[in-house]
Length: 218
Image 1 (cartoon, rainbow, N blue to C red):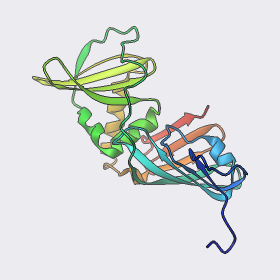
Image 2: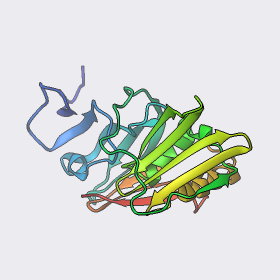
Image 3: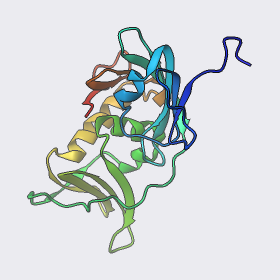
Image 4: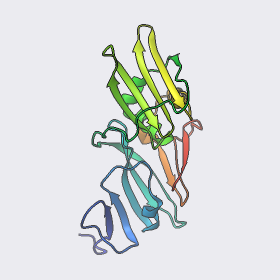
């Protein structure tokens, strides 16, 4: 038993969640794409926010954040997390007005089957969906989609070819991310640090400026 008495923990997603903030901690039962600041705001300084960040089946991380006296929270990724296989994305990949011209790519999309690159890709694009389908010749086609942009990468006779459209140029961005990760020595996802403020979620790998992502919180 806790010598200081029972702890007031909010379990997000639980039908029996406590309803009396501020809480000693917040535990989320469902994966999220960004850490909501409301969880930080409702937690006492020194309390913890525990959540699964990332919704791709092979690319989710368990996050532990400590709430600071200034109302922000900082912490790290403590390890991989299992999440259910996502359903079909709510929007189909489209060229969003671009011509979708193909080009070769030396970056294999199979890297996104690795938990760390998959997790980093979601830090860069929290709204992204990633899935694999089958092409006309029964080849694997790797698909990435965000609102307004998409990319499809498939293996042909001569290597990988990418077709992409919309803005941002999604696969161009992922290529740069994967190159930066490899140049950094392929750090594990547990190297990632996070900070959440009222306005932003910032994630980074210390010592590697190219592996840093700041996202606005709505």
